[in-house]
Length: 148
Image (tube, rainbow, N blue to C red):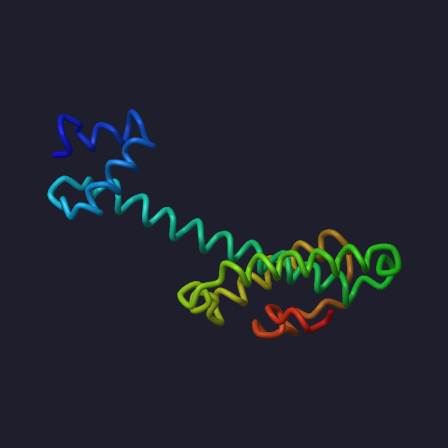
């Protein structure tokens, strides 16, 4: 144990100190003192949050691509805004996209993300000419020079 501190109790009472003590234990290879149960839970939550962030950014890009390409009525007024949003979300996702997270964006997850974006754009625009399947590849969506 790291001194008198009960690391498991710290998790509930002082999260920041729990993090600091856990890091200290790991750095010093004091593995017997690590609160594995809570550490595993925190790492699982971290992975979920990273996946949620990537899903959200990708969905935002797809929403704006659909608006940009299909909502002709609003395009003269909003095209610059949509293009800027696409750039912003692309920059964010490309900065955070690791190989592991890229693998997470497999065909099944990509299809679900596209479907969610499509639902949003349909509700926002009442457009009926939107493609049910993604007209974009992941590579196109992430390519900062595509559709710029």
